[in-house]
Image (cartoon, rainbow, N blue to C red; front, side, top):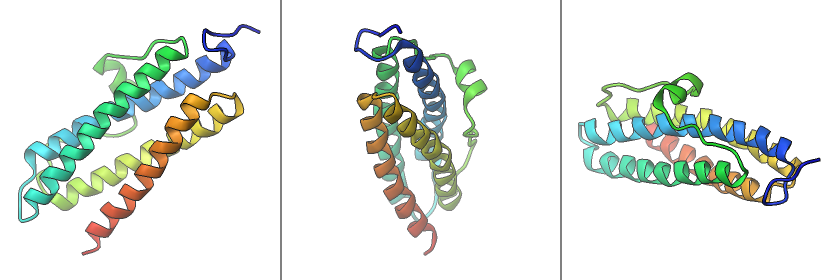
Length: 157
């Protein structure tokens, strides 16, 4: 059994890192979608949604960096090309969406992709004593469950 520099099994860290790269790819698309919604939103909820989408893309940028750095900490390499992101990601690109309700629905759909990956990572990292990844995923899940509730409440107006 080979251990990496932080004392985790190298093989299991590789498995976790591959799943983290899946999450990273999806977050990159989620980030660009949120950024596009921020730029292109129109209508009577412009000010509210413009600010909310900015919060989302800023938060996504932080998470993207945390995920990539976690992959490096585990002794692996984060993917970093858009061609890789688009090959791996299952979140669809959202192009030229200006309607607030449609953009909000796309945000929820994005979280519906991110959350299962994060839950899977939470389970895998827990089984392999990877507290760093486990803690990160636990935080992400808690935040995103609340955001889904809030965005869903917005849509049911």
